[in-house]
Image (cartoon, rainbow, N blue to C red):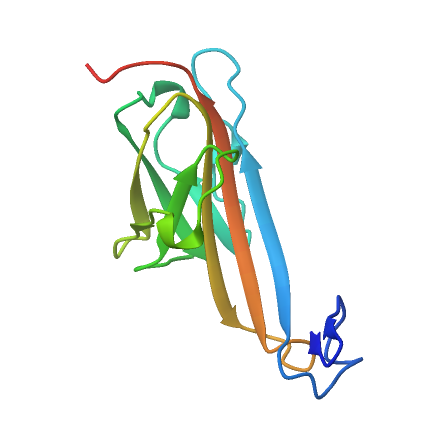
Length: 153
């Protein structure tokens, strides 16, 4: 909540007249290669409130190619949402972050610009199902994996 003394990690139960309040939730998946394919339970729908589902096998994603993900909110595809991809290390100004918009099936196609760590991030604000605790929910989902150096043929 935002108070007259700054932000506090609490709810509207303690500050019922707070001018701003949110409930932050984070969901993460990390795919780890175990041989030639990374297919695992992490590539399946887990049922998180906000979820990134890889549609391509990261072990086969070449540098210079693309990687597709589906964004689900409460099990339904989200259309028109911006998805980011980076290395998780290089700092970027918010205005400079490229975002790849999801289509009607919730699918975004992301460029693989270099080998190494890939960190895919999507965030979404939704009305809180508990308005007595927070005005909105801010959800963030991440998907991370490593791509070895391979060129598009």
